[in-house]
Length: 272
Image (tube, rainbow, N blue to C red; front, side, top):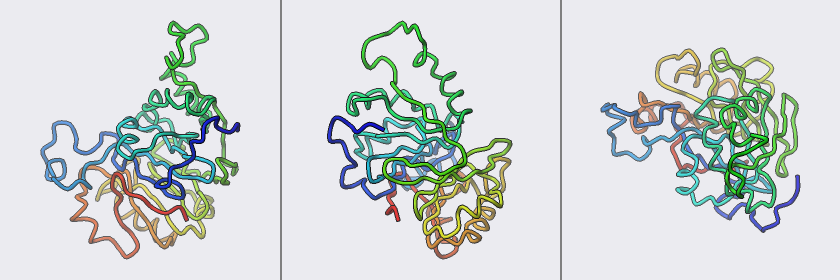
């Protein structure tokens, strides 16, 4: 990958850290039209935008997914640049912030690298067809996001100075990917972890895992299932994300086993 023409490296508050851009489910929290206790809560930890991370890798800021709320999330966290994007899967809440990448090629000096599986690229090309039209109607600089696709599969690959290991997961009827970055792993949108993927999680010290709500769901771990999976992985610290409005942070958090906690938007962890 070419080096940036400008000296945009991760700023000191991002380098070596994981920043939770969003920790909510596909609808976000509060839900439109809902007046439940969580949706009307004054606790800022119950305000959950759509799931995404920024990871400060040795050679730049990595976005994991481009969630629907991407622009406001990056502004909130004062993150000015992303050097690459890595996709877990193709669902709308994880890809529909792609257009917010339009400014980054001006800073980088080249199209934003996107790392994803074939089905994710196909969905992005369909959903943002104007960005990939060979005869675009708008031709001025910055009219569309300029990106460059890099195909990934199950094999580890280098990215921004770190070896990234994909972790195949099951999300209802979909194959999705989690990722391991050294001793930290991110596995959102999952309701089953295959045996071979547990092997890839061996020795992880920090696990970020999806836990949607107290009861089971067709495509996501419920709380008890997530706790069981986390305890099997045995990470020193587990942080649950992709949280729906059925879980109040102040109520559920204290009931979790030692070493397990709920994430919140803007939370930061060290990249260990």
